[in-house]
Image 1 (tube, rainbow, N blue to C red):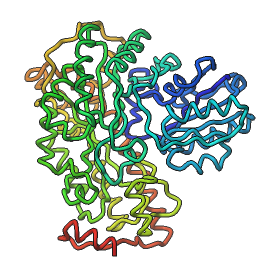
Image 2: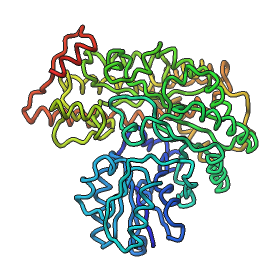
Image 3: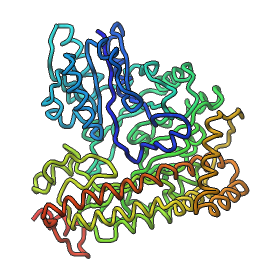
Image 4: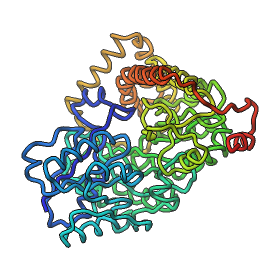
Length: 534
């Protein structure tokens, strides 16, 4: 079976980083880990070719070669996924589709001609699909409510990737999250009992990447890396030895819940293993909103103290923020900006709340008749909310625009980054010195020219750089990399402003006054729940 694996296009998002990637001659931040895992689970007697459309187009020769086309997508890739399904069917190919987006709303991809729907987790449903193909069937839907044992998941086929095009590689240690955040679809897709690989299994994946010549960053794509703390500590103890034996070839980033700050042993292990940054789901500094959305793990202490504990341990925080929670008081955008400034968080993903299909939030809003028509909860920073909020959508949109643009004011960004790295801890080990790639030197010179000479940031840039070099020199390389991110945000904040303002104008032009449920400013969480229910 000649199998063409296609990964659809992403729109421009917070994570696109085009301006930064251009400087280092790379195309995409991360590879399609799901598809290379699919290729490893399918029969190895099949032939595979993989095209990431974020790197390049599918060639005519590749279309002609394929017997079957397999694609996987997240909801933000919806538009290109549907286009590629239509293109494959136009060429007479069998089409099989899976991944988070089709699993959540299978009818949307089935309606445009998909032959095989391979839903849920592939360790169980891919063998069902293979059996159907071997029986000569040309269509089918394969689902399961069972959660697979990921200790049986094979090493992904990293060899299928165009490695030079990616800035980082992806590996996964666990699936699932123990928490119950109302808006999150991870617990719907993967469950609330985190399942982990065993340490040697993950190290075997790193061995393979090492053999392929990879020597850059690795993103541990777990939605909550510390969901099973016992098992993750076992991994880190083994990884610490592996990294020392291999002379620290990788730098790791990951995602974790903010209760990471309560476990100093875990943070120390992560730093000693080469972890440099962690994405934290802060969501909002408003405790009432956290309680209402059931993000209780963020209400057990000071969030600012938690973030700064993580920084002092040696991890750069990236934080997710959301505006538009039920019962939210006006000024939420300003409060998020103040929080990021006080905590010293350089980069933050910031978006309006979306009701993703099949989440607890989606079910509640559907029952209340508050979901807006023809909206799908596309998680992007340039998307209006897909439901009727408890205050006017226009107010939320305006607050969001101003807060996003303030967060990524180039001077404010440099100031936050400086404060973060002044207090940042570091590992006890030092990687062997090596001659930097010419493209990295060139990128550094571009950043210095733009931020240290050309722009209004020039005085801040040099002051902060020399101060970091003097007071915390071991984090200097990491600090400069974080400064480079300013190149992406400088352009992207204008994209956010333009697109949100355009959508707001269209929304208001339709003549529909924003329907909303007024909530008294001093309402308690329980009163908000009663008000919404009524």
